Image 1 (cartoon, chains in turn red, orange):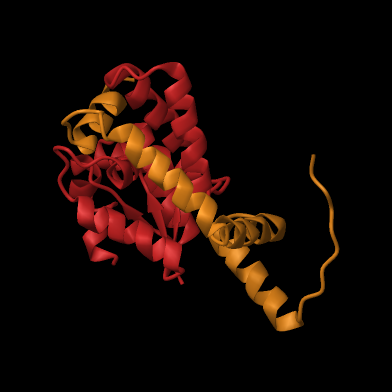
Image 2: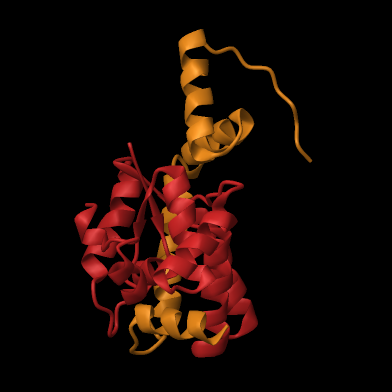
Length: 136
Length: 78
């Protein structure tokens, strides 16, 4: 079975449509997870990033943001990065000129033997992430 | 709290578990914990569907934006 680590740019497309590129393949990935064709994972980092977006970028009330984060936990299992993930992330961040946050997704995916699904241009251009349409 | 449990596995399965744990830089317990989470993360289909429906209802009024742009701006601002 394929393991796919989804970053926050993909997770948001599971919920939001207006103005989004690439909603159908992102949601197809979640459907495949539901059907057991693959396992979609997120990181704890995803909760922090989503919380930031909800509170700071979108101005949600704290209670709504908290409810949303609770719901995310019911949708998708959380992958604990391997112990070496921070070390690999540091190397990847340096090699590919990425933020450590970007690189941690890539490192966690690589060490887990998972693909990294993302809509983020920096991760896609680095070759460390792939668009969800290539996985489903 | 973490419980210690005893389980029975055929030798060849245990060997594969250990080899995969080494490959991922984790432990036997870590690998089996993730495998359990993977299985437990999927069966409750109705809870996941309800959570997804609530999520989409919340985001229906969130306005027009592309998530990749917002996430990128957030990562770069930290």
